[in-house]
Length: 78
Image 1 (cartoon, rainbow, N blue to C red):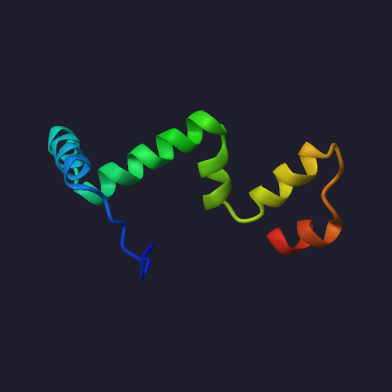
Image 2: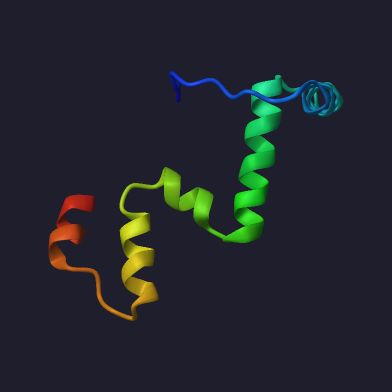
């Protein structure tokens, strides 16, 4: 996945991110992605999976309202 925007962080955060990445044998981008995903999972379990799976967000939305997913959405997932 590629984005056209850049993330700007201050020097101290940059150095900390570089140390974490080196410690885990990752690129800085992968280390930052892992930290963001871990925080998203901590705050809202299943959120990262929802963002990756087509239709999962729709399913969770209707489940939160205790309603069945409309057939239109079910057909589009197949």
